Length: 128
Image (cartoon, rainbow, N blue to C red; front, side, top):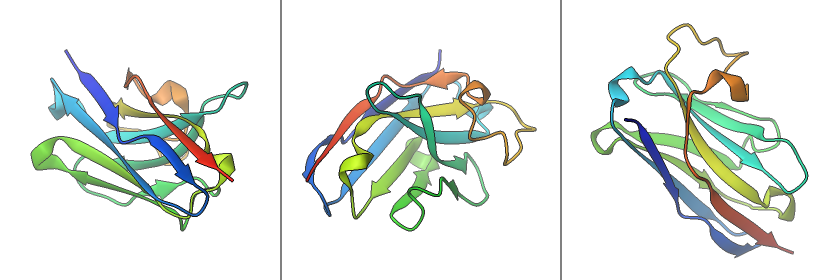
């Protein structure tokens, strides 16, 4: 059974930083891409960024490029989302997700439907 558990959310002032963690357990050998998504109240879940589980480059949404960084520690089965220069519009419930699709294209990795496993989310609130 695969389990993804996010942590590290909280309340921060605009301009501040947070680092989210996503700890994976279970059949992680089946993972190909890890994604971070977020969902604000009344809005659809949106892609933040993605990273291959083993090797490869990261990919970010334009709204966070240059401010957010995704990294992984395969020894710990953990993926991180470092968020700097936070803005009030970054306020949302942040989710990590895992895709087991070996043929996932860069254009598809931003789709919610591409991911079969999801964490429960961690709240990030940025005050102005």
